[in-house]
Image (tube, rainbow, N blue to C red; front, side, top):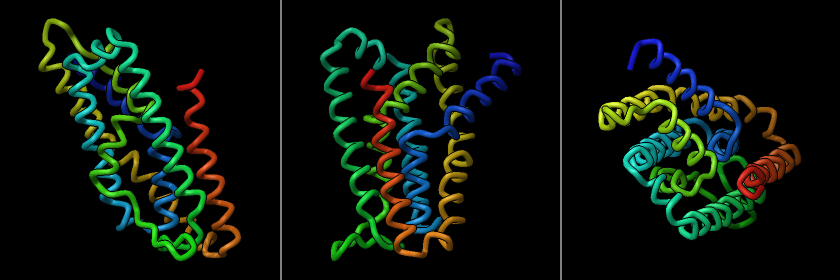
Length: 199
């Protein structure tokens, strides 16, 4: 891969990572509700989970899903159901620090965030598109790893922007009424990210 092609890959990775989607809406809400430090495992989980998804897609998982449409449908349904559950959890959060009524709510863990990448519709589209555009069948191992490295380089800074923006809103959203409506809006926005998958 030439230097120009790798630069284009980095731009693609950054733009696709920083634009709105399920991960970024959840990180914005987590930054508001839990602060930056408690959101770090979530951010690292996204980076690790997406890197593992990229490697799997690059080495044939995408072709497997194309060959078995039922498997892809099951993945979409499971991903959609889990995403709606997460949207509900965010929408019901009512206080900074994570208490919904009497129930304590915690930020997403590293493992939960990593696992979510495998059912995240935007992550699948990004992974399959990146592998289709930037890998070379004549050097599959090298180019799949290069694409994965490019995403790892830009992923943490990209997701940090959303978590940081959430932290910046904490003062404004310390008012319980504002926080309630913010969390409801984030829950609805997260649920709305399902629309491209359902079309």
